[in-house]
Image 1 (cartoon, rainbow, N blue to C red):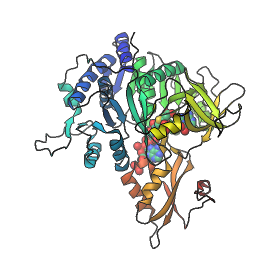
Image 2 (tube, protein in one colour; image 1 turned 30 degrees about the vertical axis):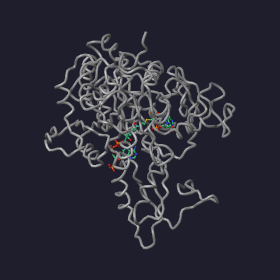
Image 3 (cartoon, rainbow, N blue to C red; image 1 turned 45 degrees about the vertical axis):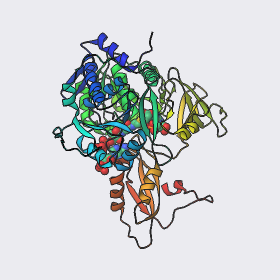
Length: 512
Ligand code: MLC
Ligand code: AMP
């Protein structure tokens, strides 16, 4: 029998569940069978735009029904999806367009204007989603200029008949750009088989069934929202309420109104839910499980959440390159400060600097392998070799295994990375942008502890002789070039950066 992909599983869930199970987005509801049918039309639209199997389709948009339809359509076609945060500005976007060479970009009007301005040669069509009038036809198109189409009108005009070409498990499904230690993001590749394996492992770890009701408030452009949230929802056939963004009051109301049983979030979301519920006992009688991941969860936050909501968060650990590899046991104990045990099929090691396994209880770098681990970085053999060489993926995270029960705690990071609200900010990327400013001689970017975001981006800046300190101007300069969450929230002007004998900037000292 042919191995299955998430698309086959969606069809199976649709047949089994109809008419229950489906996706609610605002006032619209699509049953699984409708999602399956409408995404056939989306696949035809993409094919008419020149997308062939293996070609890239960039989804440069936030969460919406249209995102889901374009995503499923592209996968059905055998295309490779490249999700991208619509907050990305020209620096981040230009690199993704250059490196992934998408044939089509799907996004809202403003995002597509940014794409158009970059004139990427690979892009043949722009599919507009979201509010705003459908773009007017442009009869006198310039040579090579991509055409712009309204995604929904095009989908409505296309046939929703069953769409034959389907990808095989070994085919690439996704390239998700993720922050490396260098300034440029790397495209983590994921095959269909990786997606399916992780979905099955997590369904077991979270006891996810068709009877669940999920409020989904994570962005679909990262693997947490896409590969955990959306895939889990579609494959389980549960009822899913997709929100365009996280906002604590709206989420609390949705959890109560929809009698949600399941919620997936990052630590900042739980901290904001607590704040919104005023840290008082808050009843959600249907609720079964709150899952937390993507960033360190402070144990005190887990305890305060339990006191207010009566639920122990189930913490899990993952990475774009490997998907979700560790999770606290459903039946417990869920000990704050640990991320549990490997999920089904995953193996882990904790090694010292020489690559030798450390004793239980000793800190070392976490290595993982398993069926959910992707094959490497797109068009980056050197970075792939550096992380995958041993057959195990180096996570760059420091971990410790508890000698008593084998549960693993994440102890820190071996690589330089700021985690702010579960968004990853590589300091180098921000430093490079600051260094482009004519007033800046040099800059160092680091994280400062922040009660809401975990860490907040901060910078120390040395100005060129004669330049006047103007933090607002530097922040605005970063905002124009990078996603807003990467801009420094505080800037300190210094006469020189503290360095060690090797010339390395001592960021620990700056962060004090
Ligand atoms: C938003 N802002 C942030 C920010 N998020 N600033 C710093 N850090 C952040 N994380 C800024 C915006 O730029 C904006 O600034 C202002 O805050 C309000 O923005 P918003 O869009 O209203 O954001 P908000 O709703 O407040 O966002 C908070 C959040 C968000 C927690 C909902 O951070 C979020 O969705 N995080 C999830 C990220 C995620 O999915 N990570 C998973 C990666 S996959 P301005 O200047 O415009 O006013 C992975 C693997 C795994 O990690 O294990 O899962
Ligand atoms: P990303 O680059 O967005 O894929 O983020 C992956 C990184 O998020 C990991 O390498 C960890 O540093 C971090 N991370 C994910 N889950 C957890 C967790 N539960 N606890 C601590 N860090 C986490």
